[in-house]
Image (cartoon, helix red, strand yellow):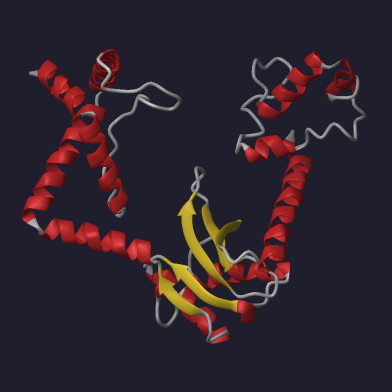
Length: 288
């Protein structure tokens, strides 16, 4: 059960897990559900279980999750073997405004296939280069040798790429072979976004496009009108044979906003507006 919830990225606990609560959280609700479906389970779980083996404690569940995570890391370690690998690192805030550092290992497995495996997410008290370095080297506890690291990739933040005190510089001081690469995809996205602002026609196009998306998405009424118009359009096109029906086809979508640093978001926004152009026009016609 713990393994299934972890695999599906589901929260274990709810806001109220008291006996009077209508929803005690995913873990307890699933246990109760299985108990109602199977008498054998019912006889050994929750109130019928021994006090020291109910497995409903937060600490116990976290311990089980840590065991599962360690097994995944051991599997990744086995795939790397004695080969060389690179480290990709980024930092971000979670929902509780806690700084988190994600660590991804890039390597060639024993089938000769390039792999990028999520290895760990570490809570940090700040995002200074020294703190990130201390947490980053924690992966060496899994018998990964620092001399086997041949590359490091981050975004362009100063605490990451700084030539003197950045994370890449601190690691280079320990191992000169850890070549630093500012992630190419991130560099390309930043270059395209900045370049698009310097070309007036392109800047004007995306400015107008952003206004269209905001006009529709900012209002629940406009959003509802868009979905209704889209439903009518899909129904008419299916009836006329212009569209084919099938699994995961003709799904309802919404207009997506432009991202400030991701050029791919510009592509998705343009594609979505083209796909929903007639429906979007009807929303504007209804407001005039």
